[in-house]
Length: 454
Image 1: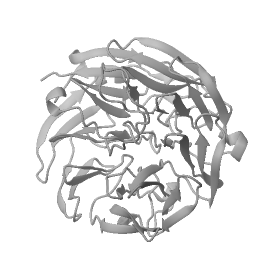
Image 2: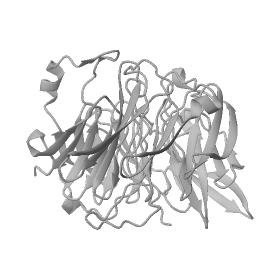
Image 3: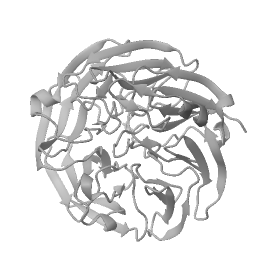
Image 4: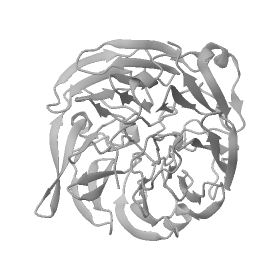
């Protein structure tokens, strides 16, 4: 079983709303279709088979290879498996229905739709998550979690295998902006972090049956939208939950709490991606209204999961002095770590020492989608629809800007009002995925394949 490291992710906000991420965390099955050499069955993997020579440095509306319009609205990242892309949306003024759509990667045509009734319909609003968790998959099925608490397993033919309501099983989720945690996975289990103001839990669910493998209580927490991550130390994987004032490590097999650190605050959004050798990044968002922010200014950091004599502990390698987090997760790439703050300021730090190389305001402004690092490029997806490309490394060099998937002025002239939702804030980018020769861009109601314009 092979674990990738990090990649493009999206943590989306409609005002204050967290969403989801894009790349693979753990391929659990061999790819049999050789048409495309990469699979992205879950969160946060580095696309190792794609090079910068295969990617567009810039694009514009005229370079759209295809547009896949989506029914409803969604904030999840696309799930890429072989030659198909899977996206989720919520439909209706009360979010009565959820949809998983399967799209052909080459043509953008719909292959099939799978619809699910919500077990807990609530008013659809730009201030509350809308199909925010990203689907995951393996060689057997696609696993989809929605903020309603509905967890659904679907085969690659679009047929449902099993469905359960976690709110019916565990009680209502008390989170004013909606739960939006994306599952992590191993070969036989799905892991969900269910943090909210009520009784919170971390849960392992058997993939085949949908039944609980274990449930570990976390007490009454606060608003949080972060997703769990799997971090490998020696020959074992530990489930890391960085959420609302603590970093906790759990035994994947039985849910035992192995280690914890409470010297953090404001860590309610970012996902702890496995960077290798037990390392992962923690990021904080200073918003007192959304959760505990005490300690947030010292909670943008590099941590390491350490195992000594079968005991685990979380070691803080370094703390960023000036870098601040936002609704996206920080990434490490080619020896540097990158943070963006809510004002769109980029911070570049040395990944070994934490020393800041530079800070620079990006022309695209704030980013809700997590950056994507490939080769000597870092792609930053601005929430207003513009993508900026920066050269990786300790010196700031902008390679490309002004990359839009559509004419934003024309879009803003439309009175985009959805029943029970209100006026749309425009085509915010929720995720970017690199494929050979193109980039997939996800906005709320569409998926674009962008080919190179230069």
